[in-house]
Length: 268
Image (cartoon, rainbow, N blue to C red; front, side, top):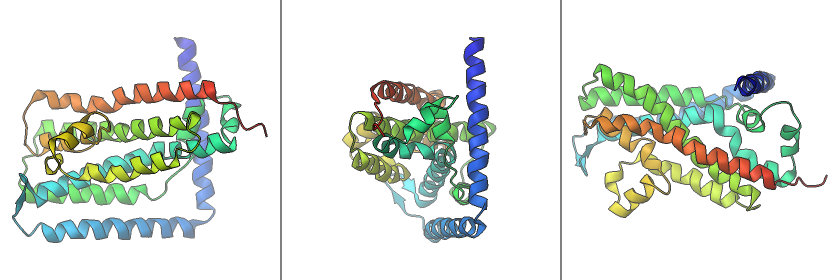
């Protein structure tokens, strides 16, 4: 056990060092970083502005007011940005497998998955986090939601769990590249399906809700946590929802490790 902990600490040290170097490489061209953040800011503000304008209405759609919908949108935006801060590099796994670049990570004295997780820095996620939190905060106020101590404690826990749901699904899909060398379209499909997490699942037929709760569990990203945050349920079982992320990571990591055993490089 002690030896394993030592190995993990060593892997983390190497990974954080790689992250610092990656971040410094971005700062070599600060203008690009500024432009990337400005682009993210414009995109995030434009999306938030639509909701802010819509909040002046009092219409209810399938049991959700626009303010409550905005809470869900802000919540999922933050969860996705949190995923981007650490796990964005896993999207490159299919390209690494096809090109043989994965070899560079396998010969280093650290856990290869840990290195991949910290191999890419997305410098514009902070704007998305700020806008998402702002949208969620304003919408919670407009919706009249009571923010009890339990709800305030639940929100950060649920956000971490939601980010891990994103991470587990993307890691599982990209790990399929060890078997399916051309799974780029499958990865893109999951990427596009992310947007469905921003809609209340009550908008969909029951079979779609069932699919998003099992096969592609996007319902655990925002819908189920926001039911509790918005006071739409008081069941104590909602505290189990954030566990979906860590639990889904287990089979995703297992799939990744199985894939590594099949990896044979490109011979170059």
